[in-house]
Image (cartoon, rainbow, N blue to C red; front, side):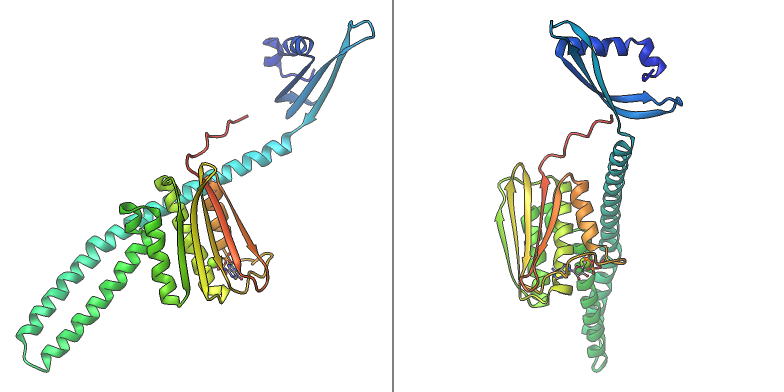
Length: 294
Ligand SMILES: Nc1ncnc2c1ncn2[C@@H]1O[C@H](COP(=O)(O)OP(=O)(O)OP(=O)(O)O)[C@@H](O)[C@H]1O
Ligand SMILES: [Mg+2]
C-alpha cells in the first residue's frame, strides 16, 4: 500500500524484501504513498526478523517522511545554482564594460590628449598654458578610467595569475589607505580561472571592509594550497566586527559567503573585539562533481 502503482507493477516491494532477506537489511529513499494517496519522499529501512530457530518470521519496516528535508535541500541547491549564474553574469558584464571603456572612452581621450599637446606646442602664451592644463585634466581622467577598467577586470589576472593580481590590488589600495600590508604566497597549484576570479572578488570586498570598518593599521593576505584547494586568509589588526547580523543594506559578507559556496567552498569570519578580524575561505581546485538529483 505504501508503494506507487508503477513501483508495484515493476515488482519493487517484493524485490526490497528479497534484498532484506539476502542482506539482513535494506535502506532506500524514494516516493511512497500516504493513506490519502498523496506522495511523499521517504527514507525506508526494512529489516528481516528471525525466530529462535532461525526461520524468517517477518520484517520490520521504518518509513520516515523526508519531504521537508528534501525540499530544503532542493531549495538550497537551486539557490546555489542561481547565485552561480548571477556571479557569472556579473563577471561577463564587468568584462564587457571594461572592454567598452578601454576601447572607446580611453582611446578617444588619448587622441584628444595628443591633439591638445600638439595645439599647445603651436599656441602662444597664455593660451599654450591653458591648453596644457586641459591636457593634464584629460590625462588625469584617463588614469582614473584605467583604474576603473582594472577594478572591473584585473588585467594581471589574465596575464600573470592570481597572486600577482591580488598583490597589485593590495599594493594599490593599502598604499592609498595608508595601511601596512603583506601578501604571502604559498600556492603550489594555480586555481582555475573561475576560482581565481572568486578569490580576487572576495579579497576586494574583504579589503574594502578593512578600509571602511576596521580602523586597522595593517592587513595581511596569505594564499596557500591546502586539501586540493586554495585557502586564503585576510587578517587585520583593527577593532573587530561587532558580531551578529549587520542587518539590511549590508551585502558584502553575504555575497562573500555566497560566492565561496557557489564555488563549492566555504568562508568563515573570526573576530574578537580589539583583536582584529580574520576572513578565511577555501575553494576547491576542481569543481565538485554535480550533486545527484534524488
Ligand atoms: N574587517 C572588519 N573590521 C571591522 N568590522 C568589520 C570588518 N568587516 C566587516 N565588518 C562589520 O561587518 C559589517 C557587515 O559587513 P558587510 O561587508 O556585510 O557590509 P558593509 O560593508 O557595511 O556594506 P556593503 O559591503 O554592503 O557595502 C560591517 O558593517 C562592519 O560593521
Ligand atoms: Mg562591505
